[in-house]
Amino acid sequence: MEVRARAPGKIILAGEHAVVHGSAAVAASIALYTSVSLRFPSPSDNDDTLTLHLMDVGLDFSWPVRRIKEVLPDSVNSIASSPTTCSPETVKLIATLVEEHTIPEAKTGIASGVIAFLWLYTSIQGNKPATVTVSSELPLGSGLGSSAAFCVSLSGALLALSDSAKIDSSQEGWVTFGEKEQQLANKWAFEGEKIIHGKPSGIDNTVSTFGNLIKFKSGALTCIKSSMILKMLITNTKVGRNTKALVAGVSERKNRHPDAMTSVFNAVESISNELTSIIQSSSDDDLAALEKEKRVEELMEMNQGLLQCMGVSHASIETVLQTTSKHKLTSKLTGAGGGGCVLTLLPALLPATVIDKVIEELEHCGFQCFIAEIGGNGLEICFDGQS
Ligand SMILES: Nc1ncnc2c1ncn2[C@@H]1O[C@H](COP(=O)(O)OP(=O)(O)OP(=O)(O)O)[C@@H](O)[C@H]1O
Ligand SMILES: C[C@@](O)(CCO)CC(=O)[O-]
Ligand SMILES: [Mg+2]
Image 1 (cartoon, rainbow, N blue to C red):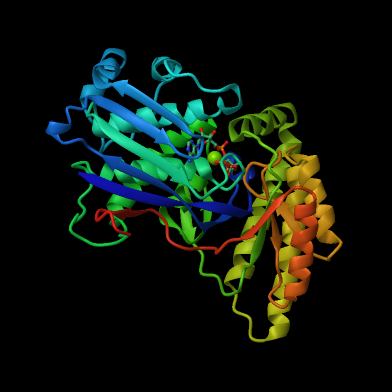
Image 2 (image 1 turned 135 degrees about the vertical axis):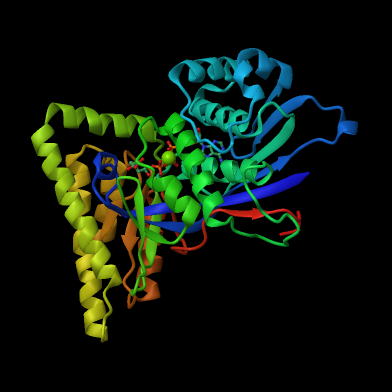
C-alpha cells in the first residue's frame, strides 16, 4: 500500500515573529512543495524496519521496529485522532534513536526534523514497518516554511493510511482531504512544528495545510480574497539560519524590554490589519490600483523596520534592500529572518527589463532569485502513483 502527500511552502507578507506574541499576520502559500511517499511492505517483503529517506540532504535513517518499541513502549498504540504534544522526556528518548545514526556536522539541524518524524509516525501509525521518502522543491531553513511543509505533508501521508481519515483511495490524481481531516493533519503538523521551532505560532502549518492567502491571529485563520495582483520576487540570500533560535532571541528581547516590544508587536498588528483591508478592497481604476500598490510597499517597508527593531535582520538582507531600492522597489524579509529569504514587490506595470536587471544584480551578489505563484492549493494526497 502506498500513498503520496504534498504540502506547499509559504511567504509571510506581514507579521512574522509578532504573530508568535499574539499579533495578526498575513501569509500566502507558494507553489513549491514538499512531497512525502509512505509505503507499507507486504508480508512477503519480510521487512521489519522503519526507514526514512531524506532526499534533500542525502541522509537515510533506519530502525528495526522492535528497537522503536524498546525505546518508546507506548508507541504500540496509535493516537492518530488525538494530536498530542511530545513531552521533553519523550523528545530525549527519541533523540537517542536519532543519535544511533551519524549526522554530519553541517547537517545537525536535520536531527529535530527526524525527531518530529518519529513522533508523528509512531503517534499516527504506531509500530508498523514502512518506508518513508521525503523530497522538497523548497530551500531548507530559508524562511519559506520548509519545516511546516515537511510536517504537513508527513501528517497528511500518515493520516491518509490511518483509520482516522476517511478518504476514498480509488480517486485518481491529487485530491484534498475533507475539512475534518485537514484540521487533524494541521493539528498534528503543529505538534511536529513545536519540536522543530520550539514555540511556533501555527501560521506556517496552517497556510501549508489550507493554502491560499490567510490572515492568522492566535491560532485562528481568516481567508483573504485578494482583489489585487501580488507579484513577489523571492531572493534567497543563502545565509543559513534556524527559526527556533531566532524566535527564542525575540522572546528574550521581549523579556528585557517588555513595554517597547509590546508596542512593536502592536504596530505590526496594525500593519497586518491595514494590509488585509488594502488587499481585499476593490479598485475601480488603474490609479486606485497604483495607489494600493504604493500603500502595500509602504507597509512592507514599515514592517521591515520593525523586524530590524526585533533584531532579526541581517547584513545579507540589508544588501537585498539596498539593491532593490536602487530600482525604487520595496523589500522585506520573510519568515524568521537572520538570513534566509527576502520578498520584493514587483508592481504590475514594472517593465520586464527592470525585473531582469534587478535579478542580475542580486544574483551577482551570490543570491538566488525566483518568482513563485502565490496562494495556491494546500495539502494534497495521491493514491494512484501516477500524478
Ligand atoms: N525536506 C526536508 N527534509 C528533511 N528535513 C526537513 C525538510 N524540510 C524541513 N526540514 C526540517 O526543518 C528544518 C528547517 O526548519 P526551519 O523552521 O529552521 O526553517 P524554515 O521552516 O525553512 O523557515 P521558516 O520557519 O522561517 O519559514 C530543517 O533543519 C529540518 O530539520
Ligand atoms: C518567525 C515565525 O513568526 C514565522 C516563521 O515562518 C515563527 C512562527 O510564527 O512560528
Ligand atoms: Mg520553519
